[in-house]
Image (cartoon, rainbow, N blue to C red):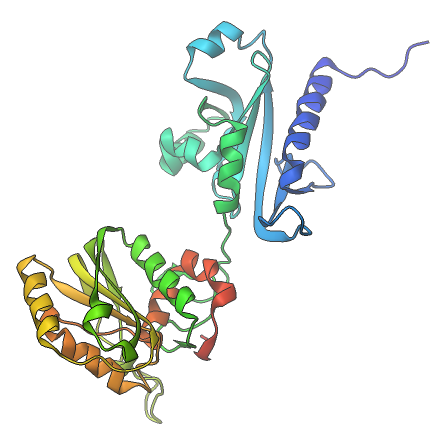
Length: 369
């Protein structure tokens, strides 16, 4: 009497799938569909990184996997050793299109029996190297049923696990800002941050500068040129490779009149190239002009510094003396200081940075759209 059969391919799939789950389960909670209709084998809801002695907490990051296996008879050890990529054939074009457009990251996991190794690559990255959405769209329009994706041998499972925490999904159901989804409902032009801790304020400013490709920073001993009662100040000179743009709430209408709901927006300020960065993270007093400061400005202008970007951990709507003092100090470098109202614009329009600092942000003015 013979029992039910388990096909060779089914057994192979069960084996590499079970082993894959065993290798990733330490990173988070496995997520699975009750029915096999989503063209996704499983997902992973990641844990936050924490000290070993603490309980694990789930993060806001989920990633998904579609797993494939390639027999050694199909792709031999010799072929694997000689090739820089592994071809994953007969993938339905519609499925690849679905993975490519998914709101959460989808990885193609490939088990190579000949090497007993998993390659795991973000589907978007693989498709983009082969022509991107345009290539997929053309194949769909032509009625092509399947496609072969080529996964680089550099995309090991170990490498992929390093990328998982950097992935994020974004809600698109809220109002956008000039056509850009923000992932929140706050008005970037009419909101204001509460004072941050000095460390958090400095970290936030440096992160914004990094996002604008600020390079070659050199420290300036500006704090030593000022009265110690001014408070904590950090100054840098470097080059903005990408244009940094900001607005000022001082020139923005917050309310509207009875005859019209039209509201004036502040004109945009921009900076690119060599700049002076001043971060007044713990204001205790206002800076005053001095011969030493004047000499610094002359030297900076001679060194082709085009503008001073001054960041204040205070509201420009209520601390006009501080704002005006910094503006006057670096007037020759066209300083228009950013306080916590202006800085809110940059934070709220840089969604990845907003989400990164979300747990540290508090709001003095929170206007929603």
